[in-house]
Image (cartoon, rainbow, N blue to C red; front, side, top):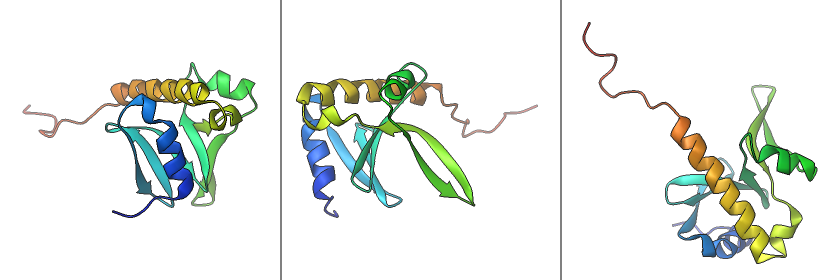
Length: 123
């Protein structure tokens, strides 16, 4: 198993009170998971939390930016926002923001439509 960066290890360690949190390497960064639900990402030693329609306003009110990247000459914006600075100083802040992100990720996971492995059925 490849070793994660010190920053990723720091993030996982500080999210330990949430339960079984782990990282998986992905596209030059890491996804942060609780069980099989990705609720945060780390890219270039920056932490981003999953947002939804409820929590997005909290991130924006703090002046935090969403994660963006360029694909096929277009800017793609994900529903992951920069973590507020206090999460690195205050364990309660890390726990609170991570729990909100996990809740947003669970909600998003429930609303995804999974296609049936059996197709559309008989006509």
